[in-house]
Image (tube, rainbow, N blue to C red; front, side, top):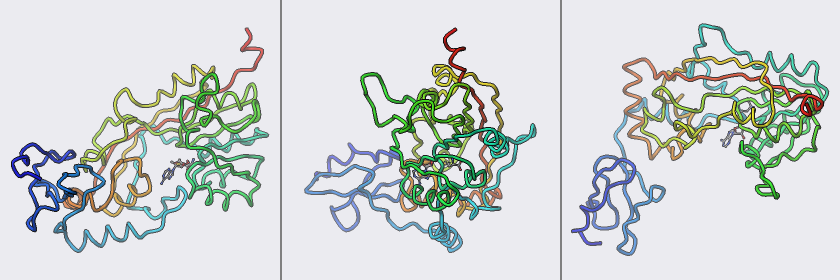
Length: 331
Ligand SMILES: C[S@@+](CC[C@H](N)C(=O)[O-])C[C@H]1O[C@@H](n2cnc3c(N)ncnc32)[C@H](O)[C@@H]1O
């Protein structure tokens, strides 16, 4: 690699300048963060996932909290390890109790489908009743089957494409997005914190059937962990890029009978809680990896010690929508 070319390059993520490492010409060290890029056969490889992390000076407390979080168990969608460390403060207008609403809905349902059941934690508290649960993330499929099968719930491993709100298209395009159920099979579909295609849900619901869903706000409106760690957010959290659930429910012919929106604050009390959460929800920061983010995590840790934690404000909603009876659709 020719030294005179060094001025041409910046590190793509933090825009820092690059310098050859002290040992010679095998690595280019970023001058503003602890990442180094390899040089292979004279070619600088300016690709984020090819980087290595140079050691960062931190504190024993930071290292202990991070390593505890990395080693702590997480399965299904069970956040009990974070009790008291990731604390939610409800909306003064009152909280949405999804479980209570779902319980009331299943009381009058004869065939229930739970989409994106995670590890089946929520559904298991509502069962037993005749139901089917889908899951697309392989470790959760196993966990959901272990928890739900004894309760008589049939767990189905579905294609992750079923989470795409656009669904299959005419002429059998995108068949992977089709829910693997016959038309008019269920009278209740539950979808808690998971995306889905309303058109497909309408297809598998009987006339007059109910969809109950709770959804977090996808657009970021207040500084969150992505900002605090200068992370890479998923595209769908950008203004105008998220899923417009109301529009797609409308297009699918649903009638929304109730929509409740709430805001709430989430406080991470220590950096271990942040690391644990980002490990469990890898979509929150796309390229998150502790080593790659160590310096930024350490800065956040120092800030959290001064401020007593890190708080972010988010929103969520609960929607109950009905599929009209077919004679109403014909009118
Ligand atoms: C947010 S969880 C919600 C589960 C459940 N419905 C509930 O409300 O507790 C929704 C989906 O996230 C997905 N998921 C969970 N952990 C994941 C991971 N580590 N990687 C990819 N997807 C994951 C699973 O497909 C799961 O169905």
